[in-house]
Amino acid sequence: MSRAMQELLEEKGVITAEQVRARMEQYDHDFPYRGARVIAHAWVDASFKEKLIRDGKAACAEFGLDIEADKLIAVENTPQVHNVVVCTLCSCYPRALLGMPPTWYKSENYRRRVVREPRAVLKEFGTLIPDEVTVRVHDSNADMRYVVVPMRPAGTEGWSEEQLAAIITRDALVGVTVPKPVLRGA
Amino acid sequence: MDGKFKVGQPVRVKASYPPGHRRTPFYIRGKRGEIERICGAFPNPEELAYGFDGEPKRVLYRVRFPQKHVWPDYRGPERDLIEMEIYEHWLEPA
Amino acid sequence: MSHDHKLPSDMGGEEGGAIDTADHGMKFWEKQANALRNTLTRGKVLRLDELRRAAEDLGSRYYELEYFQRTTEALRTVLLEKNFFSEEELKAKMAEVRRRYE
Image 1 (spheres, rainbow over the protein chains, first blue to last red):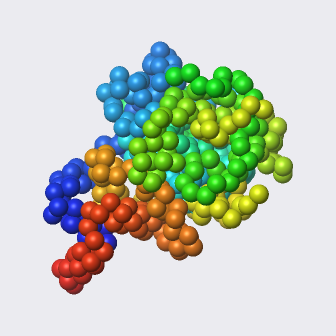
Image 2: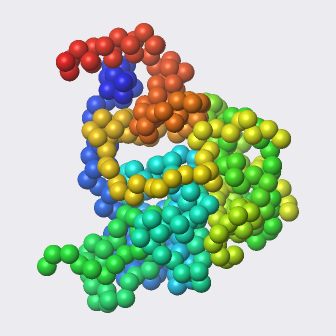
């Protein structure tokens, strides 16, 4: 049905096939790689991190990225606080920064449970947060979009931004896991 | 834009259940929290959803709630928090 | 106080089962549906708020449909509302597309 709707809209001059194709390309080849690069840069540049936390959209723009949402709120993990993001009402997600949300983020069980029992949900992802650390859940329910700024793991001293980006997973930017200081390959 | 509420101010989400498109989840209605930040003013999504322009803009806040205020049976530590965006017309002073 | 109006999408805090923590990615048609949706919202042809409302109004079908089926149904509802095409035109085009791929 969506193929049919697209063709009708093309015939009526509302959109072009090229526009849709270009967006598909961006979602596949561009958006998914941006988040890790932004966070890696925040890890090496303290003043950029501070800008990111103050105004995520402006900081990304400075980094050369248009995140397309009205606003981006970057929430920072610290030794005292662990952040995790959900959209209980639908699946709001910073798509132009992270690409498409994973299937679990859009799933009913995640949307139902993470607001009420975040620690149990994090455990299902293999993430254990000690009781002394606050778990802060963000329900992305209106016009803001969120990205978690994970803590830079020990053992990554002297790494390049590229190496750092390689360990910053999408799941860590939603807050269900934390980055591990393990480089794959050479 | 100046809103009715200030950062840190205690607020309660209205325990109101109108039909239609709302961006205030059921689970937070009637709950007490505090203003975490003022997000700015945006066209009202409750109007946009039906094809109207959502003007005049409404002030949007982020509100922070202790989880223990939201779920009577919350099993995690008392320090745990939940935060979300609530429009000004859904809030009253607490 | 009535909770009759609780929409199917408003599920935060409800009981739920184990989460399938793997990311199953997207099929080609889902990527196309997503790109169509996004092209239309970016082009201000329709608003995300309208699509959300249309999905919420699916009633019991909300839980019967998968995520991108809901997206597609919502697109259909809003595009019909705004008279971009008629039901008849859509049915005819769907039949044509089916014939092409058979």
